[in-house]
Figure 1 (cartoon, rainbow, N blue to C red):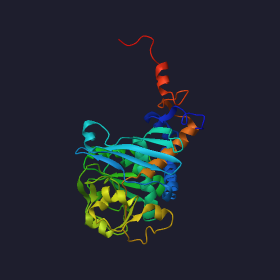
Figure 2 (cartoon, rainbow, N blue to C red):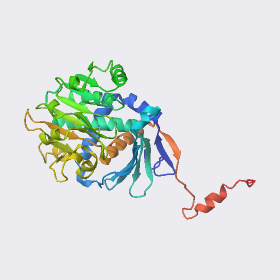
Figure 3 (cartoon, rainbow, N blue to C red):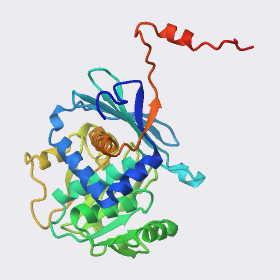
Figure 4 (cartoon, helix red, strand yellow):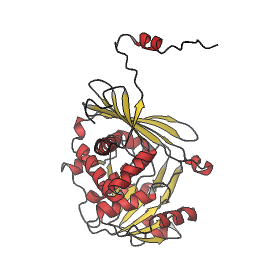
Amino acid sequence: MSASDPGLLSLVPFVSVDAMMRIVWDIGVERALTELAAYIEEDFRRWELFDKTPRIAAHSAEGVIELMPTSDGATYGFKYVNGHPKNAAAGRQTVTAFGVLSHVDSGYPMLISEMTILTALRTAATSALAARALAPPQARTMAIIGNGAQCEFQAVAFKAICGVECVRLYDIDPRATRKAAANLEGSGLAVVACGSSEGAILGAEIVTTCTADKRFATILTDNMVGPGVHLNAIGGDCPGKTELHRDILLRSEIFVEYPPQTRIEGEIQQLPGDYPVTELWKVLTGQAQGRRDARQITLFDGVGFAIEDFSALRYIRDQVARTGDYQKLDLLADPDDPRDLYGMLLRHRPESPPK
């Protein structure tokens, strides 16, 4: 999209759900996840350039509605996202989202996009990017506990980015496990449906927890986690919601995105506010060490951060510039004289006033 295209003018490119799915299949899911991880890593490597703040959250008994803003000085981005676990029982998505990229110099939006699908892709890409830096190098078996909307994205991302060959699935709802196993047929992964979380983690070098309930839960107990495992805990993403027993945290080297947010929302909300953690961007830039030895337990306490959404929107912006797969949304008033907005309204006055 050039400066003469919608983006600096009144018509703003809009990527609908349908367009997002066409874009992903045009690229290929595995390739899209791999390319998206590269965009995220690129932005993590320039982490210090970004404005950073914990997400702005409105909590209720039913869930949370959040805004996630950031800027690199030239481009501003934000995501609107909700998390409502009870939605599933009513046939609705637990998480829905949309996002915006804007020009800092003018304030004009350059892109509006659905982000329900895109958030699932970016979460999986970030998880796999972290695992590539932290998991045992030869890890080929992964357990996924919680087989809801995020499950298959995680499995495919870990295959594409980390070389995982086998996924072991468990959910308290067997229908979710059957759904995930069916969706992963033909993916090239060996899929094993398990009857318990204990059974799922047998032989797994990587364990992902991605459950949805907004509560303090113990999906993994301390005795279930042996030496050398990499834990990818992505289900705990708001205050009052965790998945791991506190003792697991005390045995692990913990890696996070943005500590001020993760201490509020992540597994480490169970620990003192000054408990030492390592920021993932420092590992990716070589300023901090990742996995030190084969017996170390590493934990990525992933809650999702605005820079990852910025990267995802940046990636989609580049794809629609290539494919033209977007709609033109009439979003911005554009009078001939910028000072005459009321005159623009007058010129659209109907000849016959409403009765």
